[in-house]
Image (cartoon, rainbow, N blue to C red; front, side, top):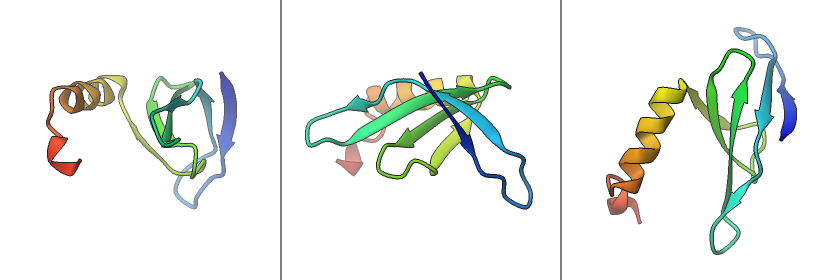
Length: 76
């Protein structure tokens, strides 16, 4: 796992995220998953390292399950 620090914004402190290995599909579209010290989960793209979606592990687990069941197929 890679550990990176996200620079603070005026309203948030620095976050240290432990990123797992990137998951790449065909066409080199790579995403990575990470956790911080507080147990929050992150999904980010390798193309924009400082940009990510963050929520609880349970919320991101529900998102991934919904995508796997076809809830986002209309976007493809």
